[in-house]
Image (cartoon, rainbow, N blue to C red):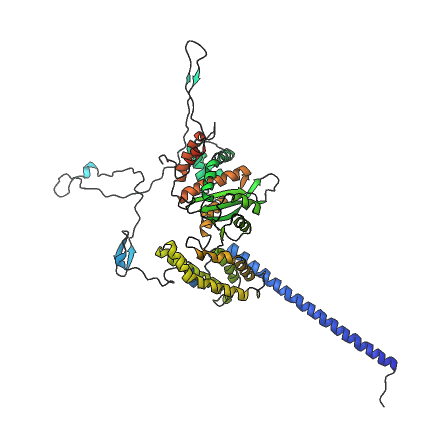
Length: 539
């Protein structure tokens, strides 16, 4: 006989069932939450792993951006990968090469020493007793010499210039005493001559030799104990004195039709209101053709500022010609500068490619094939550079370069844009690939603009190369002690790097500049002291 539950038992069973269903729903909800949290945790783990791999590569991996042999050849445009045939041997005219069947081979042996170097001749002659023929006893006659050359170095010579100002007096009275004048100096009553100041500045800013090492060298060569603080104070004084010349260089640069811009970090220890660990910046500007027509000498300029703010950018670029072309790396304050002065703003394809290279390197080694999305973008960017490299080898005109860009680069840009739009919103924004895609999207208008004119540059590499000497020197002297020292360093770097790009001896220019600066009073006087106008003295 089947037992029928009582109403109380039936109610209890219903309540137990409801509780079981409720518990099941709660467990299902908890499972969904846990699954979501696990998915988020895994995503965060992958993102952190990407960052860790990137930092490890920055510390330990090679600095080259070439990801593979085929890509390196495409990006850096090796002749073999571009299918450029070698020129026939008969067309070679290089005197330093000799004919070998099938190609030209460089001559073996050392290259001759610079014929402009002074030479000291040392003759090696036979002793008198050996100048006799062993066969017939006749005296030997000189028939020629066998010449070989060695490079000799004379260490730095430190000397003292003693200034003697002659006094004159009237023999008849006490009112006629006179003293011979002394030529004005860039540092009145300074310890170092203009030549010594030029040597110190050149050694620090061209050779990367910190002042404490220079002080040690001076002590070794001259037996003189000159402190580093004395050298530092002298550098600050001459850097400040050169400010009018740097201002003229800046005026010529800002008048240029095409300007490159960048910035890098600098630490200043004693800056009012800021900690010693705070980051300051050196803003770099350059042009390969100064003046309104862009045909003047190339200029390299550096300026110190405590920040990278938009306000600082506006001040640095105040006076730039309306409608000029500005090439930068995509840093936002430059957008405000371009908007205010109605500039043609270009972005850098090298920076763009660097983002995709980081994303590709973050993948496991066995998954970095050409089918990966970062590799596809890198390959397309390589095609853009292939057009530029071929045009450079062919030495084409500006008009021909513009035509080639329209014909060959425009289709590649369309492929890049299509690939970007297809993947922009399906990749995690905070992943390395997401950062690369969003950088490309945010800079796209500026990136594709270079094809509109053959005078425009595809990247900001020229500015990065110009700022590299500063970064290399900074590894040696590490920081600036004061704000005045930072400004002085920027001025002297500007002068020396402008000299270097114009093929001017920086040491000889600074020596001539420091000698002439005390007599300069007007704008024309300072204009005569620009690097390409100063008459340099003997080496």
